[in-house]
Amino acid sequence: QKEVEQNSGPLSVPEGAIASLNCTYSDRVSQSFFWYRQYSGKSPELIMSIYSNGDKEDGRFTAQLNKASQYVSLLIRDSQPSDSATYLCAVTTGTSYDKVIFGPGTSLSVIP
Amino acid sequence: DADVTQTPRNRITKTGKRIMLECSQTKGHDRMYWYRQDPGLGLRLIYYSFDVKDINKGEISDGYSVSRQAQAKFSLSLESAIPNQTALYFCATSDLTGTSGMDTQYFGPGTRLTVL
Image 1 (cartoon, rainbow over the protein chains, first blue to last red):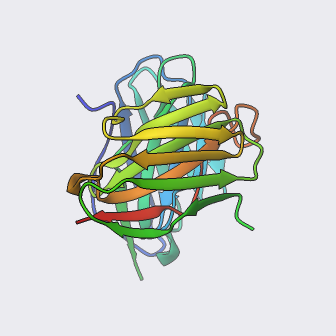
Image 2 (image 1 turned 90 degrees about the vertical axis):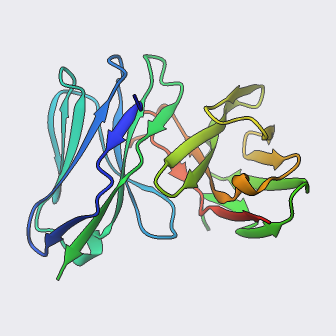
């Protein structure tokens, strides 16, 4: 079983809709969870980090964490064509924060 | 100026050649990382370093070596390049006390390496 799993997509949503991206992880003691956005040919950039169960909102983005079910999700409200990118879920391993494991990424396409 | 820089940005080489990829950062972070990215496989950790005297293998370290010359510099070497090392390579830094959260990764622009 891969440590961090994501649907590869592509996920297509119309402009203005809500895009929902999901991620599951295998290490029950993971403590830190991240969503990165990566445009084609560019480096990943952090969108959200979340450490506690529940929701965390930042503008149009909401991260949701459920440690009991070992999943983390990212909701993008009012999706824009500029949101079209690959979204990488990342999780720290164990309790020592010694390294971050990335999922394979979900490709999102927002259709005007 | 970019906080994390990588040189070269693109490199084409032949099988068996020795290659060095360099990374420099001005963020003042102690932690530095090397990743490779392949289509459909996401980012995979090659090596990481928590300070100048600390070097750790990641999940795919075979065929690679690293050197942490200073807090700001972390280089990746391919001693004898092979075609399946063709990939996009990213350097990253992180800081436990960062305002974006513990272990937020800050990435360089990437080096596209092709081994013929």
